[in-house]
Image 1 (cartoon, one colour):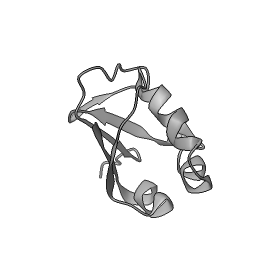
Image 2 (cartoon, helix red, strand yellow; image 1 turned 90 degrees about the vertical axis):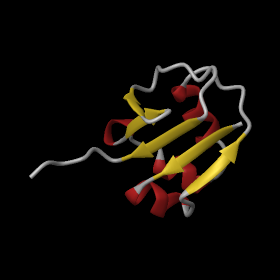
Image 3 (cartoon, helix red, strand yellow; image 1 turned 45 degrees about the horizontal axis):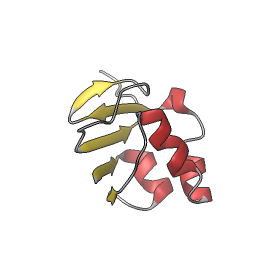
Image 4 (cartoon, helix red, strand yellow; image 1 turned 180 degrees about the horizontal axis):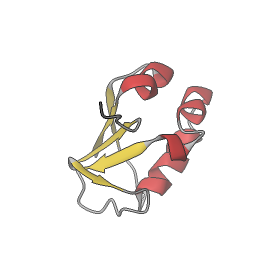
Length: 82
């Protein structure tokens, strides 16, 4: 079971701040593909992965990151400084 967190416009498009997912996805990209196939709102939220960042167990990573043993995955737009 993985806790999936959604932030900013990702949360707005999906309509949830978080959810617990049982998955056999091997990587974050596999998880995204599984989520996209669920419903149109997920497909819209994950349409452009270039506009998203991902953290696995609170560590910024990329979409090729493995999910074995992972407890939490968070999706959010890039942060801007200023």
